[in-house]
Image (tube, rainbow, N blue to C red; front, top):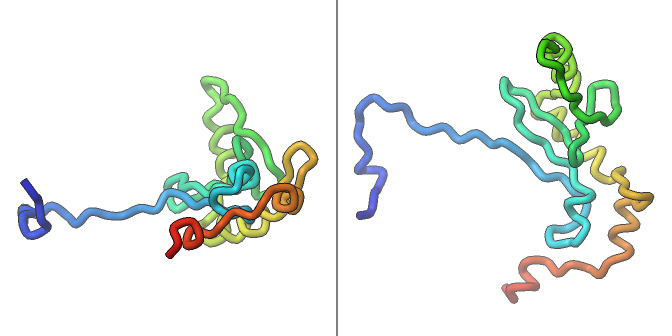
Length: 130
């Protein structure tokens, strides 16, 4: 049986919402072997706030990377303070991710090194011949 939007009951149920929950920001092309090593992820954290992450590290309002601490059972005030210092509005998070992506390094290798040390990845149109 095929369901079409016209079949939807009009029982007062609101229209579905669509919530984007993340972005991948990288200077390396899709398909590059090191893309995920040199990628910043922007993830929705709720309440119109976004995190800027590189692996397990979170970027903070103080301009440094840090890992989210293991919170003690009663560390609610401390965890709220840490989370507030590592959350941004949407536009700020994307701006920071764009600024940070070219500066990433891993085991002494930079984004430029990763690009220089590996062959070019063909564009999707080249792979499919379109």
